[in-house]
Image 1 (cartoon, rainbow, N blue to C red):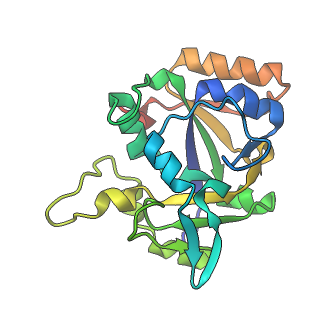
Image 2 (image 1 turned 135 degrees about the vertical axis):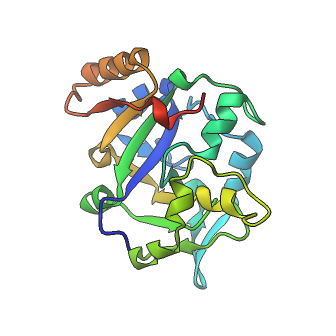
Length: 213
């Protein structure tokens, strides 16, 4: 297991942030208090398919993916690349996307239940884990790599790059470490929302290097 803070990264449309701040938590898509007007940014077919994908660890079923809030273990996820270029999803500009960042340590502090994977959660090759000792199964080099394309000698790199931390059902805002954005306009937008909700203790960082051009 890694000996330093393990951060997790979720990307959302900035239009979803106001509801999250108002409700005081992030919710899974199956949560009864999830945002009824939530603006999805992923591939619609895949989002629907994840609703029936079971989370299986050993011989036990831990619900379906729709019961979990998905985070990545690294920035610059493949989904963000697809969104930036409009590959199988609506094209969205970088300044419209906000990162919500937490950590495994904060999840534990807030008693959030979570599982994690060694690759894209929907892929048949991917394994699920619920013991932090199994974090060694994550390919951290691929997770943090800027070049993640498959190669003839490594045809599985894209799957491993997309390792996920899946937070069960809901996560309080108190588990958020910081927010990150592409440019100063979005930074001001997020800071103003935080101010409106009396949440000015949260940090908002400029991280253009976490986005695709």
